[in-house]
Amino acid sequence: MENISQILPLIFPLIILQLIFQIFTIIDLIRRPKEELRWENKIVWGIIILIFGILGPIIYFIFGRK
Amino acid sequence: MNVIETYNLSKYFKEKKAVDNLNLQVEEGIVFGYLGPNGAGKTTTIRLLLNLVRPTRGSAIVLGEDITKSKNYLRKIGFLPDVPNFYNYFTPREYLEFFADILNVDKKRIDEVLEIVDLKREKRRIGTFSRGMKQRLGIAQALIHNPSLLILDEPTSALDPQGRKEILDLILSLKGEKTIFFSTHILADVERVCDRVGILKEGKLLLNDTIDNLKKKYSRRTLYIEVDNPQKLFIKLKEFPWVESLSLSNKNGILVKIKDMSLPQREIPRIIFQEDLFLFKFEFLEPSLEDIFLEVVS
Amino acid sequence: MILKLMRKEWKEIIKTGKFYALLFSFLFFAISSPAIAKFTPEIIKSLINSQQTQGLIIQIPPPTWKDAFLQFLKNLNQIIFIVLVIVFIGSIAEEKNKGTAIMVLTKGIDRSKWILSKFIFQLLVSFALLSISYILCLYYTFLLFSNFPIKNSLFSTLLYVIYLFFFLSLTLFSSSLGNNTIQSLGIFFGIFILLNIFSIFPNLNSYNPLYLSTLENMWITSYVELKEALKPIISTILLSFMFIFLGILHFKNQEL
Ligand SMILES: Nc1ncnc2c1ncn2[C@@H]1O[C@H](COP(=O)(O)OP(=O)(O)O)[C@@H](O)[C@H]1O
Ligand SMILES: [Mg+2]
Image (cartoon, rainbow over all chains, first blue to last red; front, side):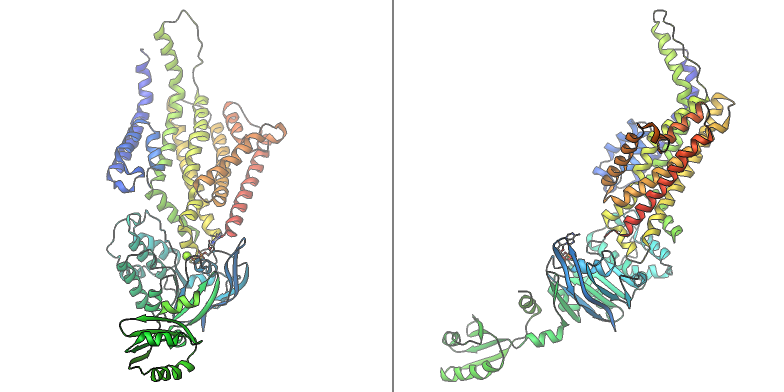
């Protein structure tokens, strides 16, 4: 397990990048009127953005709008 | 001068003759109502004129150009499709800015047309618009490049009475300034705003005439007579070959549709005299456009 | 005219958010590729150590810059490829389907210019993002693995640019033929699968655009003779122009 401390600095920028993308996407989701969203459901999209890692924001920006 | 002239213009979809040997002239400066029931071929005619589909046969001259040879004439046409669709992510202003940009139109024109259709203060994206607002924006984009010919495909069909009135008023306000060709299946629209009407059925043009002429031609075919005993007259008139149909109306009235003018004008008074009836009223009725339409189409 | 039409395409991908899907993919995988190449062996090692396996000796060679770029290419050819195709494939078909195209074309805008503006725009955006992505990947790989020859990764990425040109041409073609996004995707992947089937035949293989991705990897792992690369490059470019030509031709004659 001592290796985890070696791995962390490697993936740290990656995690930060993903977080930035997710936050950016969540802000877009919050500011967008519900009517413009597919399924008109903010909660579903919020979950998708947060749990699928980097794919969440990508899926949201491709398929999220009507 | 004619803005639109078609020569045996035809469009067949497989076996379906959507437009069949259409010979149509539309004079400059008029409002032309292109009237026909659903499926008559109105939209197909318009798509032919706009170079969206190719004629199976025949040709057309629009704004002086042969549509099968040139596409420059399109720059002078404003078109509103039957179901207009826009880039939903734009606001009306952004949408019109796009057209102003690609058509080299002065930006000032955007405010002008937004003013005309009353969307100047609308800041929302087009995707959120109601059908009526989209129709108005559709007219705005048709006017943006100040075209000399406007082609509107059923501009009032999908609208409520209020929206319909707005669009018709808009057409009236543009009358004289531009040639307006609009299709519709609503007779009342034609009656309100058109100078001329063409009636289309199953791809064929049944007539093309001014509203005034039509009314003259088809008028004096229905008589309204009031006598003291209409039943008696009804029975008498039934025997005459020049009577097309008869119906009793009101208390004393009787409606007589006649096949030709001259005989009845002389004979009906004689019958009334012979039967010893009191004549209260004798008049030729103005036909409504609806009567004409039904008669032409049937 | 084409420039003005391209400006609308730009506004479109910004306002619909599709640009962010592209941006995120290109940026994320530029960094994740070297990172994953570096830490995958470490994770495996730590897993093995923690399980105290019965003296099993597993040799894991230390990762190099080559693993980083192989990973990068794999992402370019899989997820980024898919994202690009999905984002761009509707550009013509959906405008036909929704009826937004006729509003533009009935104003006398030339159909070829309209379609070309979309293609050139897609090419430019993809190329710009790819360049940024490549430089980022290069920099991060340098941080993790220190010095390495740049030439190989550059050539391999240039091969990908040609491949990109090809599949964007195929996207244009599919979008021109299809009447909506789904149909266009069907046409695109139909042809893509055909190309995969053709790659079974060894004597046709060197003319197959898909062979470029094999060469991309070879540029990283070893070296590619120019002579060997020339055949697929030329045939891919010819095929691309054919698809562009046929796509435009079909659209010009199409009834809308
Ligand atoms: N693309 C097409 N393929 C086959 N038939 C068509 C096509 N477009 C129109 N039609 C047919 O042509 C006829 C005329 O249609 P249309 O011009 O849309 O009529 P209108 O606009 O007067 O309602 C209809 O019977 C319609 O079904
Ligand atoms: Mg119609």
